[in-house]
Length: 434
Image (cartoon, rainbow, N blue to C red; front, side, top):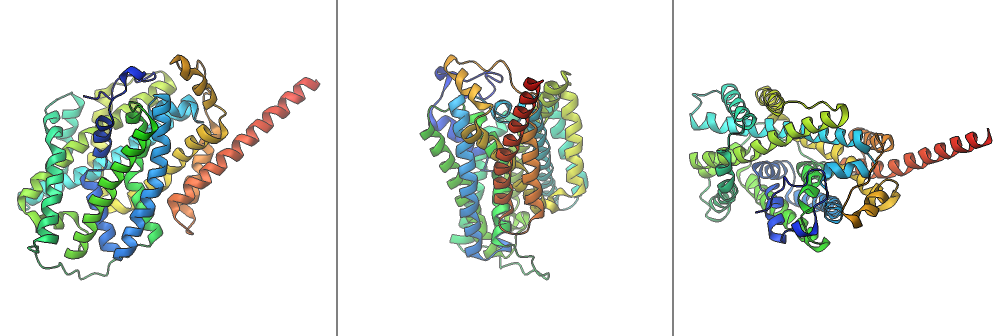
């Protein structure tokens, strides 16, 4: 079994690399979750069929190129994404900011998944358990489980993926093939339609955290061909199969409400499958979010926070997001991820493959299997370029926001680094003249 918790602060040696299948199964699990099915339902309900699949194709192309590039770096250097940030422009403190972004994003996913869990519980009790109470109970219970190391969820994780895939297969057969689905749901309100560019941003936003976490897995891969095949397998399963089926089902039932689709197609049995699926995902969301905050604080201040205390605090916040109604802002959440995370990845890819200012030390030390002794404390050029890309993605309406933010960050990093180098040379020349 692949152990993804080894070598947290060092390179993965060649002797510890594993098979293609070992990494691919874990990576594909990132996009075989209910949120991807929910994204497909939104696309199918808010876009014409051709536009929806165009958004998936173009969004998957952007996601695939970024994921392969970043995953290749992880394979080549044998390092996790958080460590790569130190030598890919952001520096030690800057890479901690990346951890905070990931932690906050995962906390948002915790709130969304917990909301789905709560709606399932409320529906299973036929409304006797209100959504707010169900969200509070489920969120706080899972928080206590993760905070104090209860291991029962390992059993859930072993069968949750097969159960989820079986759920999707059953919904698809019942709705699309057997034609036994209930009559189309008629909505009395006009639907807000999405453009292709908006759809592309949603597709990227729904998967971009997987790109950022890909080196954590591909550092165990043996070569670039494996990274490419892993990326393609994840896109085919998560984007084209799961999202594609959700698009057809949403159009058949005339609704983008994931809970309506599940209850119309499978009844209470489907609700139980949803509970299992969200349990599998949410314990990891909260666990990774807590680790991100603990590591970020330790790397910047040297202070070691209590993992249990951080987990409890984040769990309460995530539960509050559920009760507040973050599920109703699912599209807004994906839009935000789709323009905030790509710039960070764009900067790191640009540094490693183009600028090569800080990453050259990383490549040089690779032969010895060590890490460079020093790195810049804060990579301001990388931080400013990421902020510039995010600002453009959020404010400029022309084109695809996710692509705009990515490209602006890449170009800005080159410009900012060139200016920084120019200023440094000017200061050195001024000092020598004195």
